[in-house]
Length: 522
Image (cartoon, rainbow, N blue to C red; front, side, top):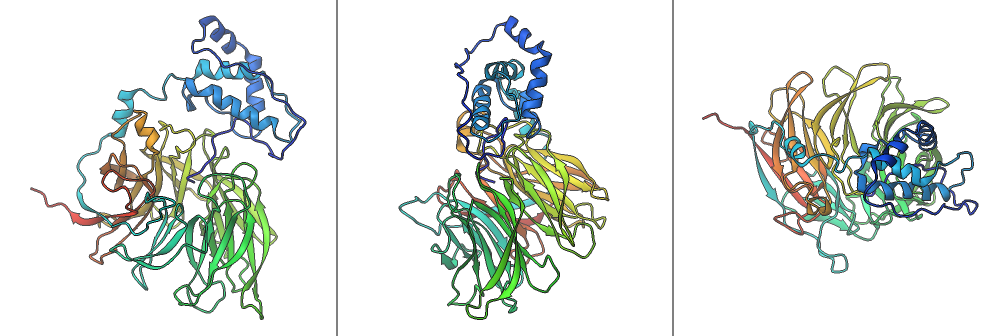
């Protein structure tokens, strides 16, 4: 999620309380004496207190997750949130001691420049597949918000109209886009900050509707402006938007599906929220109101944590009931299955990241090894909180080993990776992977590295073995992606959405990397 909150050392229920007061803490000096370092590191009781205090809400952060210079603010932020929480069951260790502990163990930098360059350019021979980039012309102009893009969603309609379903969360726009960048039925009135646009048929009339996840604000904040908007029969000239869920926090994703097998589509809602808001909601379709013609829904809260990014649906355990998988970020950093049982949903953690600042950014359900069960492509590369590229950012394959057990395979180091999708790019019958990255300009301006890849593909050369190739480097501005044979030439192409101004176009919103097939050997 583009607006993921900065990692908190201890986040609690986060209901406001006036009963706690923060202890005074002076800014530490830049240098720490060797004796004070030894004192902090030799204090086993302090280490236990830190593990108990921070580990009460999430995994205890590892000192290497931030450079030495960042830990004063990171510890302070964690304590600030604790002191404004309603929790009274924990005994915080002295804040200054915690800061000294983390600073004593933290690296000066997250990784040395030479290592960074080596990893960023690791073993990437020339791609055997040729790609040609085309950047589509700008199509929005809003003097109040500027011409810089804010593309948040792309989905290709393969069957009916050969267009992209598209949204721009900065400009409050959703529309369909043709391959030359023309808009069809643009809408800037129904939503404030649309971040996902899904097709559905909530009224059951066999015509495509849309459901839209509206953040309610471009910037992260706690409010109740988030909503889910339904556009019935969206190709109709007189279709009108209907809010089917409002008054909640920032909504990051929506998915439709028949969760109770009654023939009507229900809706799952990912309320990302921020600090005080967030959750996962089930909207059970109760049928069409005879007067308004609008479906009525019963709302059930399935999870009350902030930070859910995506909620793809699947019958994960093959019991005939539709389940879904949630990527929950913030300090939780988990991939969680919500198994649809007769008496409600059972939560099963499929993957838990090793650090609460891991930067989860996306999941995709796909049978990557084509063994008949659903695997998960997982990416962690979110940098919008810390503005730091991390040495553990990358693409992982969570292999389904059966019985809801998933094994992680790290496939590629990729700073800022935001999305990964699988398809057969080289036409050899197995599934390859495409991934794109998004890094705030501050990351590059601070000199962390100017040669980061922005688009890569991973060729499956042997079952479960992948070779990395760079498609583009030095322009990591892509927040979303879609792949498919857009020009019907038999090759899988790549469309990427611009969230930030790119090097060659400050206002372009969409680029396509046309797959021109296997290069001829010379």
